[in-house]
Image (tube, rainbow, N blue to C red):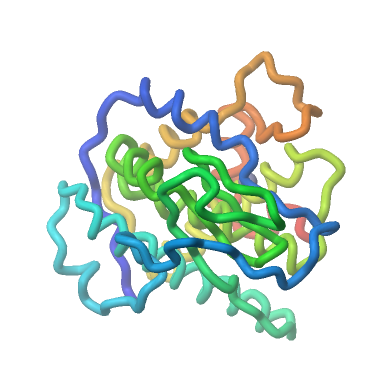
Length: 255
Ligand SMILES: [Zn+2]
């Protein structure tokens, strides 16, 4: 599949900064949580169903510059498919069997989806290791998509998918910031390698969209790096993402 990350108009990030800093807990359901627990979405197939089948060709034919929900859903579907293909190839190269993340679940209301018995809040995206799924507030994500651009969707999905890979590899750091910066690096590697392999084509402005998105998700500079839930400052997250983007997984300290 050839997917094109089209360019989108960008607007002020002021509101987005407020929205994205709420996404502090983007990996929940630690190793102590019961494994194999089912997610509990009340509306598993709500209005947004980005987990649906890919429609080949749609990515090539859609018009640039639009920011419709349908386009967002297609981007989530494409990003998931590319991440699966990418990580399957990495695991295969290491002689390991790859198990894709079980589901990607959009939600609209606080508590609509739970992870290990913990209700998920609005304005967030998480990887839940207890149920091996990614869940995201669809309204919040579409808002970010409209503000930053479509590249943000590929980053967000790639970052959460990376948490699923960390879980598969048994990587569990003492501090959340280590876990998060590595996930940013892995998201960068999946995107950079996919561009190099031509699974993904970037348009002018997409790299700026990554930069602007990362700027928006950085921790408050006053937040101690060792605090639970710390993800890293905008500078640290940008550095980690582009280290992976430019130098691939060797730069992410996976071994
Ligand atoms: Zn994270």
